[in-house]
Amino acid sequence: MQIARTIEDARFMIMEAKTRALQEGRSTVTGLVPTMGYLHQGHASLLRRAKEECGVRVLSIFVNPIQFGPKEDLSRYPRNEDGDFQLAEENGVDVVLLPSVEEMYPRPIQTSVRVAGVTERLCGASRPGHFDGVATVVSKLFNIVQPDKAYFGMKDAQQVAVIEQMIFDLNIPVEIVPCPIVREADGLALSSRNVYLGGEERRQALILSETLRLTEGWLAECQGDFAAVKEKMAAHIRTMPLADIDYVDLMLYPDIRPVYGLPQEEWTGQRLLAALAVRFGTTRLIDNRLFELGMPKGAISNV
Ligand code: PAF
Figure 1 (cartoon, rainbow, N blue to C red):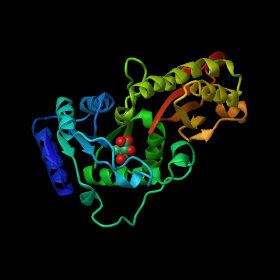
Figure 2 (cartoon, rainbow, N blue to C red):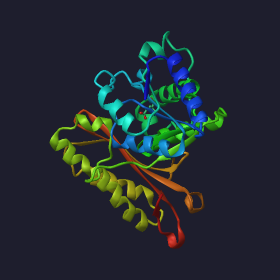
Figure 3 (tube, rainbow, N blue to C red):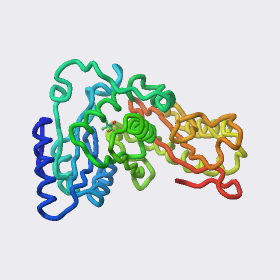
């Protein structure tokens, strides 16, 4: 595994890795797993998928300042270079791109990629500018690495929708591979931010996955009254005194459009994202579950 701290080195090392793959008669399909580091088993699952599907595997680790708001956790975002290298090595990474902020943004950036529509709700509404920062840095990473495939976790389901929209609109030749959420045995979705949770906060945070599990039944019985399901979800989360709701919502996916009040023809056969963002103390956690609506006999199923 090689480590590139500059863009020039990364390009050279990726070219070398491709040449090696070619010489050894392996696939030169290049997979990128973009991350902000402090890797956990969720990231490992993306790396394993990239290993299965690609002959050349690139991991980027970059805590991207332009996707954090002024009051967000940029300065205290957790880091663990050695742990990240170990997990990368164990999961078959060829090149780690670990640029500094100065390397990625040597001058104040004057170009930004802004995706409209899918960014208007959920995290796009509660974190203004966040998805401009994500779309911009992901475009830069795509230009640096030039991957054939890029792997993203569905815990950030809206981020996946934003990037899919971006590559469609801008004809970027990268296949986006969404990968399932990885959870702890007790249901908590893995996140680098879980490290901030105190013991009681972590215990109460289990309400998120529990609410998403119960949502399945509430949706099956709701007969199109999605507003009532949203209310049940919020009420269930509020049973935890430390839970401070940022949003609880039901959106058609991937357009991230509210489902409430739509005629049945507009949601039948569509995917529905049940999405949560809730603070426990100073830690904001997100979680979601994707359902398919209006399956035979009006049932719902997990996607
Ligand atoms: O999901 C993340 O970790 C980040 O938003 C990403 C995609 C690496 C861009 O900084």
